[in-house]
Structures are given as C-alpha cells and as structure tokens.
Length: 378
Ligand SMILES: Cc1cc2nc3c(=O)[nH]c(=O)nc-3n(C[C@H](O)[C@H](O)[C@H](O)COP(=O)(O)OP(=O)(O)OC[C@H]3O[C@@H](n4cnc5c(N)ncnc54)[C@H](O)[C@@H]3O)c2cc1C
Image (cartoon, rainbow, N blue to C red; front, side, top):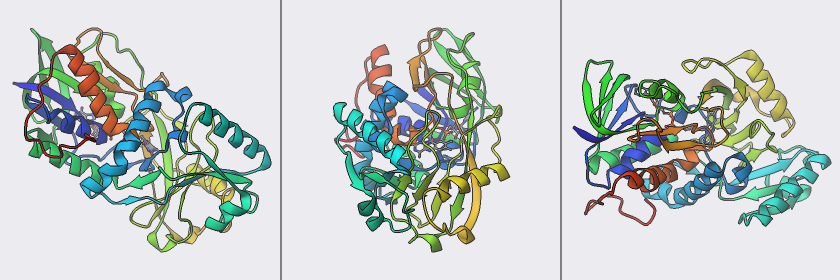
C-alpha cells in the first residue's frame, strides 16, 4: 500500500514526486511511456518565463507559482547541473503603435511591483541584436528569462526523488481507478494493480480522462491547443543571442525565437484548437504562419538551416488558471490540471504548493531527516 500515487511523469509529476520524497510515506509515480517527459514537457518552448510574461490577469495561481518557480530555477539549474541558456530575453515592439502598448505593459507591471522592466530604445536593442528589423521601435530586457533542457531537468529531479526513496514505474498506463473504503485501487495496462491512500492526477492533457475514472462530474473540460515549431540547427546559433518575444496577444504569447542551450533555435509556437489529445502534427499552414511572424521580427532569417519541425499539445482547460485542488467528490484525489504555460516555469513551485498547501491541509506531514538536495529552494 502506497501513501501517494502520482499519475504522470512529466516535469510536474516528477517535481511532485521529488517534493513528496522529502516526507514520511511511500510515494510511487506511474508514467505510461517507457521514459519520463515524452509529452508536453519536451514538446514546448522550454522557457523559464520572466515575471512580466505571467501577469495575474492570465491567472492568479499561474502568476504566483510562475514567479516563485522562476526564482527557484535561478539556483536550481546550477544545483542539478542542467544545461540552460541564460542570455535573457527581449520583449520587442514591432511598431510605434506596439511601443505604446509596451509602455502601458511596463507601467502596469511597475504598479504591480514587477522587479525588472527596463525599456531599451530602438538603437539600443539593435546594438545587442543586430539582426532585428530596423522597424523594431524598442524593447524591454528581461534577464530572468532562460531556456532549459527540460528532458534532463525532469530526469535529474526524478533521480533525486528515487534516491530519496520514491519509486518511479514507467511503461505503466493507468487504465482504471476504483475508490473504496478510503483506498484507491489503480489498474495499469501491464495488468498490475496498486493501492494508495492519495492519488495525484498530473497526467497533463489526459487529466480529464484520469479524473473521469474517479469523479461523476469533472470540474473542468480539457481544451487542447496545438503549438507548432520549426527548429534551426546549431550552425545558426550566432543569428540571435536573446529569446525574442513579440507582444503577447489575448490568445497566446505569440511566435517567439528561442535559443536553446544546445545552440539550436526554436521558432514558434502557433496556437490552434484541436480535439485530439493524443496526436499533434506539423502542418504546412503552421510553418507558413511561423515564417510570417518571424519575418516581422528579423531580417533574413536563416531558413536554410531548418533541421526539423515538431508540435506539442497544451493541456489547457475551460478556465484561465491552473486547477490545483482536492476533488469535491473524493478528497484524497488531487487535481493538478490546466497546467499549460507557464507549467515548466512553475513546476517546482507547483510541487511545493501541492505538498505544503494542498496535501498538508488534508493531513499533517512529517519531514524526513537526511534528505538529498536539502536546500532553501526545495
Ligand atoms: C506548445 C507549447 C509551448 C509551451 N511553452 C512553455 C514554455 O516555454 N514555458 C513554460 O513554462 N511552459 C510551456 N508550456 C507548458 C508546459 O510544457 C507544460 O505546462 C508542462 O510541460 C506540463 O507538464 P506536465 O508534467 O503537467 O505534463 P506532461 O509533460 O504532458 O506530462 C504528463 C504525463 O502524463 C502521462 N500520462 C498521461 N496519461 C497517463 C496514464 N493514463 N497513465 C500514466 N501516465 C499517463 C503522459 O505520458 C505524460 O508523460 C508549453 C506547452 C506547449 C504545448
């Protein structure tokens, strides 16, 4: 019998396993793929977003946990020895009209106490990024932004969790859950059955599917959004140094240029509603849209260096904010749902929140002595 079973071994489930491994009790993570982080966690922009890009209007919990997560990553990446690109980001205005909007964003952020909002002129910004178009009217420099190797990050945090006593079983797809007399019985595709007192649903786009195994009425609906990318190989690495954000739209953060720690540059993502949570394809329209948006940012993008394309599906729900709460029907079933962007950024803070503010509210937790990675951060 386990105390905590987590469904889903993306970055979120792995950080939760790690956080729980610091406490008394048996923790097990079940992941359907043969290795961790094969779904959303590695089919994204891999950005640790800065505070300005996660305003409270887009979700109070997203803003809070995103900000806390960003602060945690500043040291965590070095502690875990995960490759990161720390050159920072530029949020650029592509016209005089956009410059007015950018200044308003900056004023709002200053009023909300956002730390880092220094405005650069058109000349200043093109001095540090000469390939940006002359029409770029100005930018805000955001040094707390970084891109990270999210596959290695998830692997390293999961490894710490197992060293602390958590168990991780991959190739185990949860197919049915039964709740009786305070115990979850969890069946998997391999024919195994596991018993647990708590069940934490961190299954990403499959959140609703898992919740339906336990609840009569799931309190959210998944609304999958596809994001497509094209990737420039590492021979293009000198083309830009900073992550380039255009001004965000109501719908998304727009199409970005994202230098990665391995020297490649991701261009994307698009944002397209789709019904399937199981497959994401790269389309001609997607590539066309990405190129059109990138052409508004830089002169002569090196499209001859494109190595491949890929797509990911955001686990968006019909509510703006993250949905992290115990079930109204079965209290020991914890929803960790709607974890679309900034889910990578927020992941370490989501884990802390789930353990210290959700589970600890349901029963007292006792911290183990002699943990690994026993720091101020986690
Ligand atoms: C296009 C795109 C761009 C994004 N860009 C960023 C960004 O730059 N910065 C940022 O902070 N966030 C970004 N995000 C969001 C971020 O990627 C997610 O919030 C984060 O990866 C969510 O992690 P997760 O662990 O919840 O989900 P996932 O990584 O999807 O993990 C869920 C896991 O559950 C497993 N699973 C599903 N069903 C079962 C089952 N029945 N049994 C067992 N296991 C199961 C899956 O195999 C999967 O491994 C982006 C997302 C997308 C799609």
